[in-house]
Amino acid sequence: MGFLLSDLQARWLALWRPSTWVPVLRDMHSAQISYSAQVQPDAYKRLEDDLRRLEQQNRCRILEMRSDPERRQMKAKLFRFFGVLQYVHVVDLDIGMEPKLHPPQQSESSAAGAESAQDTMVVIARSSSCAPLPAWVPLCPILAILLFWLPFPAAEANRTTATKLVQALLNSPKAAGKRSSVVSPQTEFFFFFIVAPCVFIMAQVLQSGIVGRPRDAG
Image (cartoon, rainbow, N blue to C red):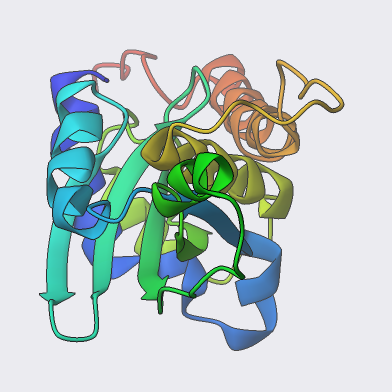
């Protein structure tokens, strides 16, 4: 799923989520989707195993799971990396099973097929970016706290993260649509507004001779 440094720092980022501290910027750094699907009657009992399966497949890391068997509801918090540069997205899942509806009277042949898919699973997933920096950047959690005020485009990336995770959980086919760009807006922001200025400043410092010039002997 990622490098060791990314995995270690991602847990601190997922715990703090600095990029969601400013309410005005929260919508820019997050996205929410809702999804419903017809499932087998025992789908709720397999929810925890399905989430563990996704974790074993390195699609996410589970942070917290709480279930309510009486109401057939589950809440889960997990994180996953987005893109090659490994930005950390935290996904909050709210999963519920709608009450079984009795189908109208029909023939025995059609009733047998309907009986196996009478439950509806409703999943609400909210994905949030934790930082404008990739998780592999050294001291990323500290830098993310210092840059908590910085706005960056990440809503579409979080929508993609939430959609892919829910589809994997429900074993749903990928929806047809526009292919996402290899270089996300957040990656462009990272290179143009963070990496490029840092490289420019370092080049200016080295060129000025402040660093590396030997002092004249008095």
